Image (cartoon, rainbow, N blue to C red; front, side, top):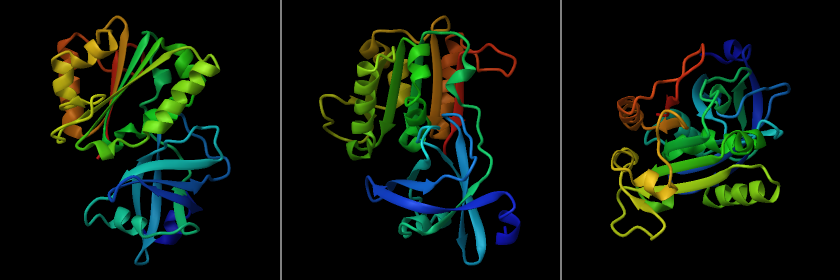
Length: 261
């Protein structure tokens, strides 16, 4: 898309900072367009001008809706046009932010249940970081369970931030209890506090539920899955086998998913 056409639906913002977790994983922040609105869990569409054309991609927003900046969590795709260019930018560079936010994977869509399970592979963790900064989510659910699956332990980003959110929620009396489960698939000797295996394997054999001490079932559990499409597809199958159904626009349902690839 050419720049003139794109400028009608996007705002030219500035790159504020880049934090590199590994050589392939980074968190970046941009200024926030005036009047920009989103619900925690939604994603933004961003554009970069590359060789005279706009290249756009979708990224979940990890920051709180109350912040005056926007933060995103991304993986640098080998030979990916957008992320390869992004990885070379420095603060102050222009980043276009489309004026609308997108997505339906938000906690407020659940009308019942007392435990919210948030399953993520890789950068699929992003939307949950935004949700967990909302006190109303902690007040809504007695148990908040984040399951983050990666290949190697160094890819377990945002560990300190999640611990800080747990401590803040406790200190300020937000209500719910946060359980953070981290799993690796390729480390030969993972640390004692890490699970070993794919999220779907740990879900099928009951490992996740044993650690938390609660079942994933239709009456009380509500589930979100975000990340690798294969993981998301398999989670849907597992949950359907347990009698759970996807959320519907007219109400009802116990899980919602989003491919993040």
